[in-house]
Amino acid sequence: MKTLKKSLAMASLLICMTSSAFAYVGNSNSFKSHTEGCRFERKIRNDHRVYFKTKNEALHAGYVPCKVCRP
Ligand SMILES: [Zn+2]
Image 1 (cartoon, rainbow, N blue to C red):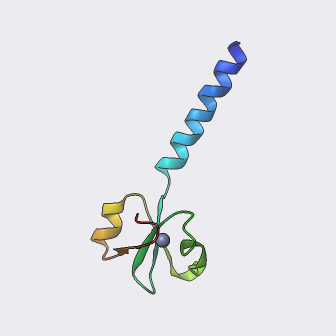
Image 2 (cartoon, rainbow, N blue to C red; image 1 turned 180 degrees about the vertical axis):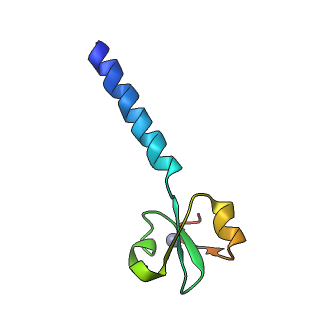
Image 3 (cartoon, protein in one colour; image 1 turned 120 degrees about the vertical axis):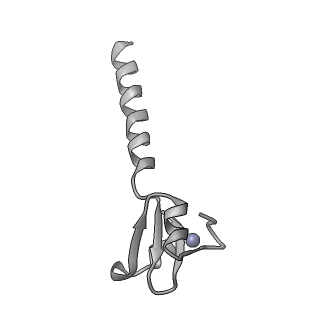
């Protein structure tokens, strides 16, 4: 049981780490921001990708939230 508890703690730590990473991706070509995993986010070319940690960060940079994924 001890090992199970440990692995659960590890899993929640991983989730925590993932959510604190860059969750928003902006398209410097269209000036739209997406949540990671949006089907439009995947289409953004690598040289047009801008990463944001928060929604506000993207808004302040002048990016409009995507209407599909609603970041
Ligand atoms: Zn989107």
